[in-house]
Length: 95
Image (cartoon, rainbow, N blue to C red; front, side, top):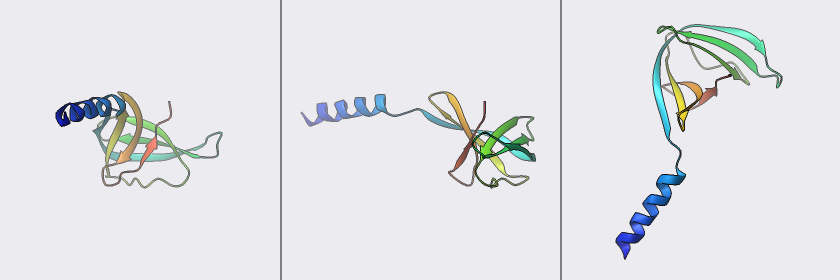
């Protein structure tokens, strides 16, 4: 009986949990301030050494520095944000 209960709990957890992944996208080569969005957040453009470009918003100056290693964060196979591999916080990528 305990075994069936354990399997049932595992099935429920596997269906309710989101698929969260992170991927290395390179090191910061350049970052520029673009402007402000309609919510008065700062908008930045970022380029990596692997030729990838991202536009993201932040309520304050981002913690990225030239040479920092970056990760993209995906939830249920949809790109959600970009972050530094040293910190768990990530910035939402603007589409």
